[in-house]
Image (tube, rainbow, N blue to C red; front, side, top):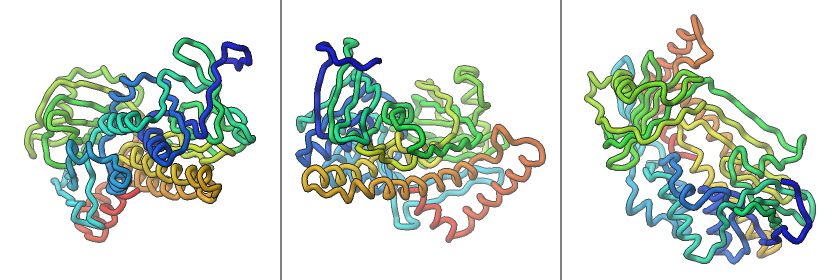
Length: 405
């Protein structure tokens, strides 16, 4: 969209313009509005889409503390469930880690992300927060100047211009915030783990009372409960193969094999509600600030899903950014803004390190490995699993990092 100065361009303003209505954008909007900061959320999708898009569902203890602190956890406490056990299935048998009784005693709360987003959005609207759906942010201009602004495309196709003092980019890896970063001002770090997953949402009750990680010569398989009637499964998948390449019958049969159902009990089957193929890749942007533009959530970093860190980082970053923006706008104190990037990157790199370790633990080989290298990696994987099975120190380290952000 080209910028226009004619009378047809809508002109709006807010002290903080938030791009994206995911967990980061909504938590940020709630905290800013509650603090009396003039803000607006711009979301390119519809409200229905925002509230129904499925994502991860494991909330870390610190995330729950943040939501509790700001009165945003009623839904997860009433409809979610506490979880603290992993089960690993390998060629040497199976073993369980009660990680909730290890480390600092932290548990996850299982609460589908679409439910959390619905709770946050409902609260934000109930307290009078402003949000514009179907408002596609195109570019952020003059972020390094005194009067930054965001150009958008309205639902009817008209251009709009939102003036702001600060812009919070919570609109994902391919959103306007990242696209607006001037070349040469930031560093983009990208890593491909060389693994692809087929993600499945099954209309079937959970088959075990734990997160299931199955390591098999034919590839990884995972089991994660979502609700009493819906379970998420993962299959390590040949890169480049479409999601509909296998029938439902073949998928369930393969899950049975990799999860060793013959040895440990059958899986509860049901219709597949959703299939998606995704590569396990990660990236980080440094720094997370360019003038008056700040990045949070997936716009700041993308993590492979093996350790369920993405949404938890997004909520943490939103709280840090809300405190920093409130300090600057309400008290003229820019200390929080000046340290925002470094504070968040410390958490991001910790999460990236553990996610990389977890990815290596679950996958003996990648799509790019073959021959003698595959045997070497498989032997390392087996050694790691045996250490995790037998070493209390290793188990304590796992528990601390598994729930930590």
